[in-house]
Length: 314
Ligand code: G1P
Image 1 (cartoon, helix red, strand yellow):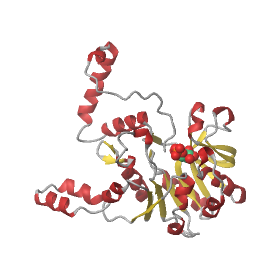
Image 2: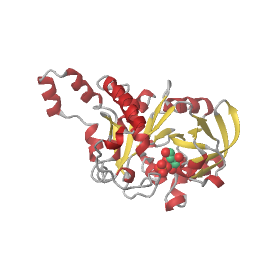
Image 3: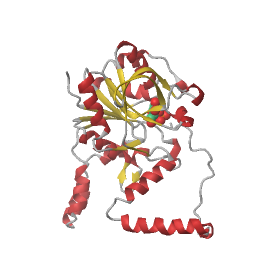
Image 4: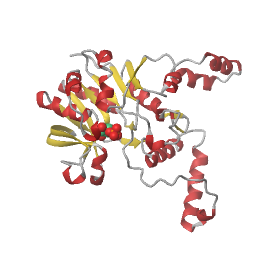
């Protein structure tokens, strides 16, 4: 059995949910306090034993490459000033085995993954989506790799979501729970309406896939939204060889959504040594103000008049 060594991180989307911030900046570079969201994903890959990472980028995504490159002038300046801790932070993101390829047209997640065909070759690999930061004792990607080592088959991470939200996700139709939290799957369906959803178990952005998926992706017709859907290809794969769904029991932070992003920022801030005490006090004071209504009179920044944040991102 081949070892799982490679990960791909699709990062070519426009990030329309975060406009105007993402007009000229990749959404993957928006920081949670001080760390770009894509760095959390790269760290999960490395903590899971992944050796090589391919990031699928597109137009305006250069800052991601720069972030993981060295910056000799900055490093020299920090060294000269004796700022060792900051220097360490900068150096941590340098010298990793990262590779980049562009997705020339935004034709869907399946099409983005297809750009990794030559990089992956004939090895099993993981796909990690940048909108979800996962926290658990064992990193989720490592859990999937362990699942592959036991089952010798593709393992897709799923999690229960509120029934009214099924149209935001790929949803599985579970056939049987073969062991605790591991399902055989009858069908994988991309973004079904709640009335058509076969369950509340949603695909959450971590996939362990066998390389046979590429032949399927090359032939598959566009699905929901006119896009080449990874979920549809997985459904076809499941007809010729088992694809398991692994239920994730840890914490998922959806940073691809404004409210999820704010919650993650607060949770991370409450653990961050430089701000945690001040932030905790601020939240306590703010809750009192919210209770008494005093907040109504406070200064308000100008907020965009956008109503729906549930639109699918592009
Ligand atoms: C993608 C997948 C979907 C999955 C979701 C997880 O959708 O197509 O199956 O459930 O990621 O975040 P997107 O969020 O890119 O619309």
